[in-house]
Length: 361
Image (tube, rainbow, N blue to C red; front, side, top):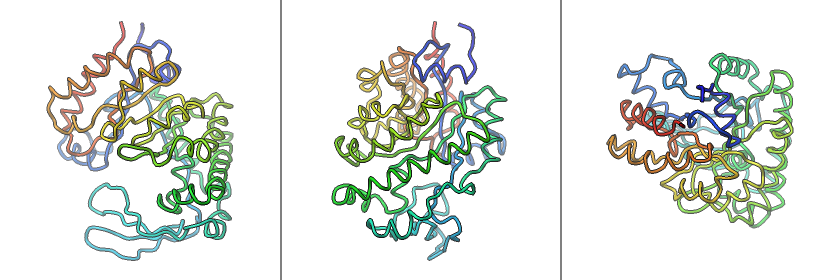
C-alpha cells in the first residue's frame, strides 16, 4: 500500500479500514517540552507534531467558564502555589513551578439552587466563548501538513466538575439526579450551539475529540446504570450532532472506565483514548472485547517509558502493537501523556520501534 496522509490514515483507523501503518499521536507535559528544548533536542517553539511526524492535531476552541466578565481573584499566593477564584465561583490552587492538576479547595455551587442562581443563567452561546481565529489557523496548519484535524473540548462530565467539584456532583447524582441531568442537558446544548456557530463560519474539522475523565484507580466515578441514566443522554446528544455532520468522535477518559465502555459505544464513540494502565485498563482485553466496533488510542504504559529502559519499552510495544493493529483500529500513544522524566531518546525509540512494528504488509 502506498503511504497515506495523516488525514487518510486516521480517517480509516476510526472506521477500522485498511491503512499502511498504525496511527501516531501524543500528549506532552509542558515541562517535557521545556526540558527537551533546553537539551537541544527540539528547537524553541518547534511543533512536536512536525518533529515526530504525528498524524493529527487538535485545537481547544471554546471557553465554557460561566461568567465571562469575571476577573479571576488571587486569594492567596506563595512561592510555589497560587489560589484563585474563577468565573465558575470555584476556588482552585495551582502549582506555579510545574504542571499539575489543580487542587479543589471550595466551590460556590453545591446544590441545585446554587447552580440555578450562579451558573445556569450565564451559559449562553455567546460568541466570545469561541476563539475563531485560533481555530481557523490551527485548521489551516493541519491541512497544510495533511494531518487529521480534530475540534477538541470537554463533554458534560468534564463541564460539571469545574463548577461544583466531583464530590458535590457525585452526591447530586445520587441524591438529586434531576439537578445533574439539568446540568448535563444545559452543557450538551451549549456545546452543540457553539459548534454550530463555529463550524458554519469556519468550516468543519475532520473529527471531534471529547475529554471526559470518568474514572480513577480501579473503578469509574459512577455505576454503568448511573452513567446510562444521567451522563449518557448528554453523550448521545452531542455525538448525534457530530454524526449528523459525518464527524467521527474520539473520547478521552483517564482512569478505570472499562465498565462504562459498552454505554459509551451505545452513545456512538468511534475511538477510546487514553486507556490508562496504572488505573487498571487493559488494552488487549478491550481489543478482544470491542475491537470489531471500536478503535483505540493509547494503552502503552508510560511508567515503562519513564524507566528509560529501552528493552522494557521494546517489550511493551512487542506485547501489544502486533495484536491491536489486527483490525486496523489503533493509534500509538502513551496511556496518559509524556512527563519530563522520559528521556528524549526513549520517546524517539518508542515512536520509531512502534511504527516499525505497526507497519502493514
